[in-house]
Length: 443
Ligand code: ADP
Ligand code: MG
Ligand code: MG
Ligand code: MG
Ligand code: MG
Image 1 (cartoon, rainbow, N blue to C red):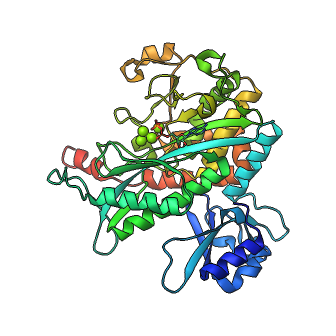
Image 2: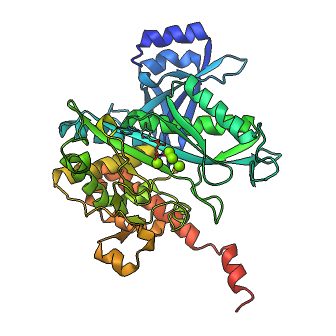
Image 3: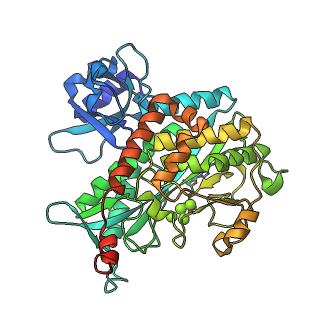
């Protein structure tokens, strides 16, 4: 929506909005809220609302902690679950420095910058269709998550009133009230696991939508006594949660990935973009799969990708080309998980694809057989490499990739690598239950 300041003032009055929730996202992808009473509306609309940025992950040194929140009026939305004390509206903001420059460590500002580079390269929009998955666990007495799945028991297999299904339905209805175009919602392979797909949008809107989506899922689940988690692999031995990203690049002539005369009806641009994605896959994995636990999902046997390869027919590789053509022609990246900061992840995959286009990077041949049945030698002959197997190894690749540095900008690139190396070190120095079970008595 292209709301003006006056549109906003009118909606506040008509709907009796009492609080404003100003949203932005930190380095780790966590949504940050600054809630202010409606009396601050004029200040907000005049870009004069200040906050202390020093406590935000990945933001500033103490000496320049005063930051401004500039509202993106197109993201204005009144929450459907407002209280009896009046309604709450949210607006997504850009973080600005006191000197009037967009703050480079704000992941959303960074994506806007990369989208600017894309426009200079002659494209109009990068479209993203995400497929986020999540688990619903029963909530404990104090509102804490448990590891009890809600639909695990076989007694109620055919029960018409499954709590999880009802909860998912309300999530979908709430999303629709908030303007989402939900295309599909279904139970996933694992017990307690769900997927909700909403219609693709331009990269910035899609990233905003992913953040709003997570908030809605968690909020509605609570109402049902359920705890929603986007942790990639909460339980050993069963499928983890991913967030496939479907992507296409449009110019004023339409979808540049489609060419009815091309091989597989895919354009040369699409092949170069694909080449770029494959070339940088190992390094953007650190950003698309950013937590220690992400790598417990990227293992063979659970439908998650493990090897760097693509296919036009097979569903198992890192990148798939779904069969739809015309405006729906797209590449599907299957490694991403929902803990990725969507602004950073999308900036990285776009920069990778643009690098492929600029340098005419041809992808390796497609792999249309089951890679998991190939042995190491056959994979080597087909030039198939592995995705990184730990956060540590992914960070090593990210640290050596100049194109990814360009994707994130100096500030975010360095603070991401530093923070994530600390996270990995903290994990590495812990002794786990598995180790005690295996070794305590044996040695
Ligand atoms: P899958 O077959 O992998 O389960 P889904 O049907 O669940 O795929 O999701 C497909 C996603 O791709 C949806 O979000 C849809 O809006 C999106 N999509 C469709 N066309 C395009 C396009 N041109 N660019 C990007 N995403 C697209
Ligand atoms: Mg799907
Ligand atoms: Mg599916
Ligand atoms: Mg799925
Ligand atoms: Mg998919």
